Length: 268
Image (cartoon, rainbow, N blue to C red):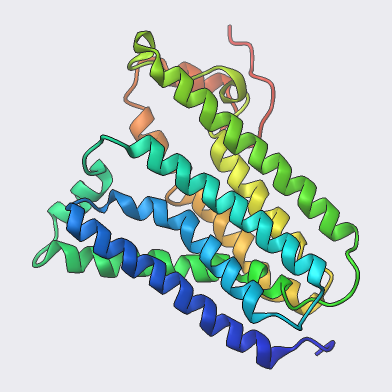
C-alpha cells in the first residue's frame, strides 16, 4: 500500500514492544527494591524515549532521515523532561496515595499485582501511544506542511507543560499557599495546562506521520487514546476529584476553562 515498508515496520513494532517492556521491568525491579511503586510514573516518559531511540535505530535505511531524526528528538525531549520533572517532584516523598489505595485491596502478593495492573499495562499503553512515532520513521518523501504544523503544535504543548509545571512548583514552594488552589499564570486560563500540553504534543507528533496515508491511519489511535485519557480517563477527572476537597475550588472551576485555554470568566 503506497510503498509503505510493512515488513520493516512490523519488525519495528516488535522492537518497540521489547523496549517498552524492558523499561517497565527494570522500573519494577527498582520499585520492589525501594518498596515504592510511585517510580513507575518516571518510567512513562522514559518508555517513550526508549521506543523512539529503538525505532530510529531499527529504521536506518528506511524513510526520510530528517523526519526520522526530528520525530526521535521531539519525543525524547518531551519524555526526558517529563521523567526528570516527575522524579524531582517526588523526591523525599513516600508512596503515592493512588497506589497505596489500589494495592491495599489486593488479595495476595501486592508487587505481582502491581506488575500486572500497573507496569505491564503502562508498557502496553506506551507501545500503542507511540505508534505515530514509530510509523513516522518509515515515511518517505520531503517534509510537508503537516510536519511543520506538527512541530508548532508540539512546541505549544511543551510550552504549556513546562511553564505550567514551573508555575505550580513555585506556587507550592511558598508555605503561605499551602492548601490553596493554584489559579495564576497559565492556571488561570485552564485548570490543566500540563494535560493540555500533553494533548498538543501527541497531536503534533501524529502530524509528523501524516505525509503517508498509511502511517496516519496507523498512528491516529495515539492522539485519540491520549485525548480520552487526559480528558475523560486517568487525567482530568481523577485529579479534579482530589482538588474538589480544597476550599475555593468551586469558584475556580466556575471561572476557569476545564481543558482548552481561554481567558478566565468574570464572576458576579
